[in-house]
Figure (cartoon, helix red, strand yellow):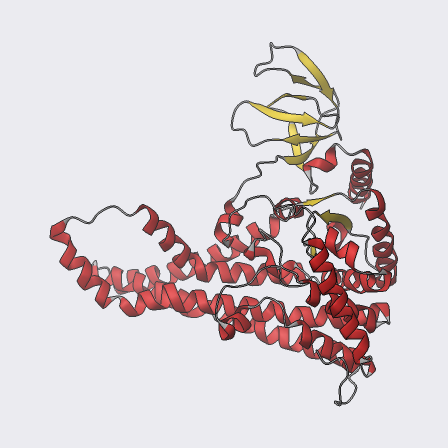
Length: 463
């Protein structure tokens, strides 16, 4: 790693403007990448209409209607992914509320939020010794920042401040919203490939008389199959990775501007480089949300570089060095060594694996909430009973009032399985109106977290 540089100094503002222009070009490319797919499917629909001896108007209607339908599908994907609560992602990465000395880091985040003029994000901790962090949330008012136990143990105050400023910059730059748009485009391009994978798992044997025709059709459609199942997924992965890498550079520059101390972030990056940022069981579909790459692509060197969601740490340090002329080589070398020493020490400590979860974007998007979801009772002035069994003739074990927080489980029956905030299990009548709340189910049972969320909701209801 080269912390010093012979290149001319670069103003942070110049770097931010450059990254923003580059991001706009990448987003334009991402949007343009869906045009060939929509055109191909629309033309195919028009050809099928022609083979069915439909009129010229009918052929045009088939093609245009297909194009409009595909644009609507893309819009629905973005809307669905944007509507996913932050709590679902937090459960996916194994986040929990802080405890004990971990709460001290929340004070640093609060000071940075005030300096940036942003609402204070909710703060969480991930039980892994790999030093890393992430930010999530479509709306800064309901955003969240999570750090690993390893990060809190490895970094000093100024280094941790740099990492938190980086994550806060993602929140302020609306990077989650941008990444959601890119992810929706990427998933749209990958849907044929993902559905093809599922079809291969359940395909039934082909009758012998049909086999020659199937083989011939496969040869004729080989270019189409290559485009749908190889070129499009590759383009989707490349665009998503390129946008993610560019936003990491932008967040580094913003963090340097916010803290006025780039060296802290440089030392943090060097320590994480020495310790390693890989998280056991990390989900590749959310790797772009982390401070440093939590998982490898498993590809060769060239593909690894092209598909990486984060720039090499050495490049990030080199760019930060250009903001203030660099720092002594010995400081960066000592930070790398500290990270390596921490890594060797942490091998003797127990590692907590993240919960098992689907690994591709489509499965994550369609997955439910096995841990339940947080909700708020609304729309009633009278207490609502909670029964100990299914059926309103059973014993009442609790009452809930409007505004009370609950954890409800997926249940298609007339009675919903719920846990009240004091962890009373029972069944709530189906007619009770519930509003989903973006918080972890475990936070419903924690008095401090519950009070914080109720205060946020009160402010939100008042605006």
